[in-house]
Image (cartoon, rainbow, N blue to C red; front, side):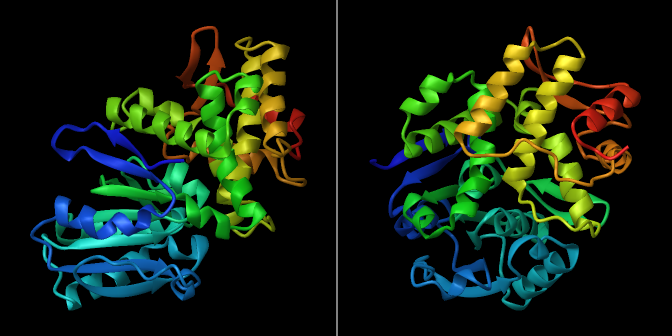
Length: 352
């Protein structure tokens, strides 16, 4: 696959998502072109990644590397404060650049720190995981978790560019690949790809499709005023599951895996509401099965606790809000009856 440049059209703040093998080598030229006054760069990466032989990036600037914990442990307010304090000690100016090197947790954290330090400095994301490449690093959403839920503290802060180096995917474990496939199957469903079309596409083509779809949505609705909300398909239940995990529930589930469960539930809720027929539910199940993803709710979860967590989701407005399929395609549906959702959660395997 040759290098593909997918634009995010946002006027003066437009940028490219650069996809291909070896594209991390373009970092210095991206910084030179997009931040010509920058004198310093800070690379924010996880403790595990900085030891990798491919992790030494050439920025073309005086560069400092700061490490953060691996995974969701990085996505807390104390890490934002620590990073901003280090930026200040390094005397970063508004002309300088933050570079995130990592998966979705790193891009979310570094992006948020860049958004709030000096009220906003430039950031470039070098996305190393599949879920970061097809979702987390693209679109300018940044944030960290609170004890009460996922990504409840954050900001919109568009990067100068996103580098999706497909070579780095070859370093991932099978489960890390599965994590990203949860976001890919979401895009397959939203774009109406048939199972035959999915089967005929290569892995690189599916990755590029998912990135292109998100870029087009972000360009049309940057701040999630309408159309962009569709990208939350499957995420209402997914974030509730993740919130319970953050709250101490003994789970071992990753974001894309939770999204897969959320997609299966959203299809069944749409059927319960008369918006989707059995064939539509089967299309969801078949797509998940194709990617080897489970649509089953983890055993033993309280339906009531899930319902409460969904009510606290950042996309809700003091009510239950889902993206659901229907005769007009996919759309955001608010003010859902809690008793109906609870009943369907119990049918889905939640503990009454």
